[in-house]
Length: 493
Ligand code: AMP
Ligand code: MG
Image (cartoon, rainbow, N blue to C red):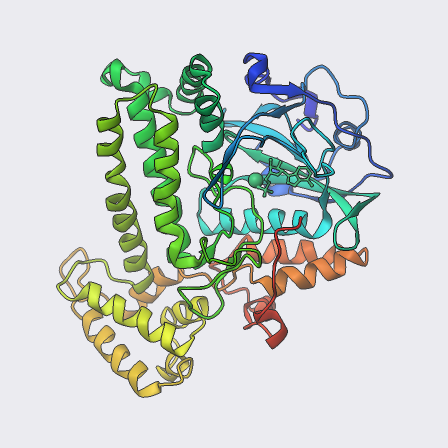
């Protein structure tokens, strides 16, 4: 099957009352054209290798067939700690949901579609550079194993978009199992529309957590069970960010998916040098969303969601279940770091070993990704491939010796000493060689702004296999050049 109209399509969101959204058609753009099509992801829907011209028409403001019912969702949210009631899809439209070949439903959302009632001072458009960044990073995160929104492809047009300069406009077809954010619940809570709040919760459960309506779950607790799921998934998402060195940059509650998926890619960055205080968002002067603040902000955002759920769930129960967040996050983070270090068994002193490493890496400004990849290659490479990453090589060597003697205590399932090769092999499966460094994204953007989209395709192909050696693509694993380390990524998009 390759035709869009043959896909299973649902309008589940459009069937909700009018208080949830406004119906809006996309505003046409000039000379729209496809610049990238995510063929591997499209294949999971049974869609073909190349994009359909009909889709181009539909998404760029041509006639929208009946099987889509575009709408702008209404939501609110806390931005940098301040409640903003006036949010909603200001430049994106939800067209409907399509099912993949396994029957999983994905919202089809067009980002950059034009003005909506929630556009406020904005123009409803998205620029090429930010569209490329979202497209690239969501694919990179998915390949790393993180829960994330995806994209089916992107288009550009000749409609100019005015930011600090005139830029090319682009459109992203974003797919996600949900586009419901913490801020959707906040909107209905703060406007006192508590019947709609309950309806939203009922729909979230029916669409995303149907297992919670099973007979075993006490029905008076179904909303609490939903919140518990949201907490758990959020904790797991943030543990992943911390373990893989990902800084989101704008963790406002309107950018938090209720499914714990990385959502709304803005001025994000993967760490180059390990710096826990790293702030990727040029506009975040206080460092509210600094890398090491993310776990605490996850908590803050969940308490904001808890507040919005008070009409449905008893306050004491909310407070009690919130306590599970930190435990789950620490548990998951520790699991991921153990995998990264190749330690399968727990031993006294493991936490100190890990803390000492992170402190040493911070002091020596060691590249986070490269360090773990080289540590994973000690079955093939000498120790100094790791120690040379540190200014203080003596301290690095002392840590490595502690680590290696700790590794010698590892045993396999038959109680035999685990081989170095087995350890390193398992580590290479979790420590990426290729991540989306900001400078790589910037090189692709520079080429795309000159009309060359080949580098984008090339980079995406590399990032789809982050754990493979790919010797022919070694250059994508290189450390950033000096200009690439201090790129300032603004919120303007
Ligand atoms: P963001 O900071 O991208 O998460 O967006 C925050 C809010 O601003 C959301 O309601 C967006 O829909 C809206 N928004 C962002 N950029 C634009 C734009 N260019 N035009 C209209 N609304 C926008
Ligand atoms: Mg957003």
